[in-house]
Length: 214
Image 1 (cartoon, rainbow, N blue to C red):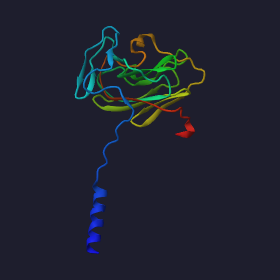
Image 2 (tube, one colour):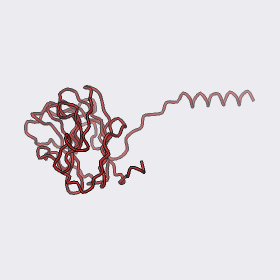
Image 3 (cartoon, one colour):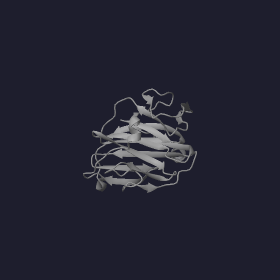
Image 4 (cartoon, one colour):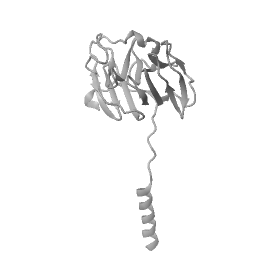
């Protein structure tokens, strides 16, 4: 009996003291953390230097933009992109994530127009600062943010650090991007006059999820 009680105590302590490893993103990794395999420099003109630092990709200041375009294949709809991004320095958007939407494209913009304006460009000729996806958020420098962008046939959703900040239904809207972001197509990341770091970039297919199934 004494042995049995001791064994139970050991098992109880082991279960209480065990540390759960952090969840790892699932899906297709788009960045290997070592080099720019699968990517090419976006030809914006005036782009800053791009380098690899501590498993992350670093964008130096662009004049005005610095970016990378993915050269592999991605889904055109019903997918989500996850990444971590850090604004190192600067006062404009540090996340400009351009992705396909069927036969056109859209861009998630975080921290534009002075560093706090966010949204998805563009719907019915209104860009991220002036449509119903627009929101304002303060982003601290030298802090990692976890970003998730869901692109579904019927809606788009934006999450930052697990909090949903955009849930827009696409119902007959014209979807398009601003012309200056064209070098990012079909899938790219960019920053505007801002030093930025990215890591842990993943994409995965999802189903079209209505609100009542969340």
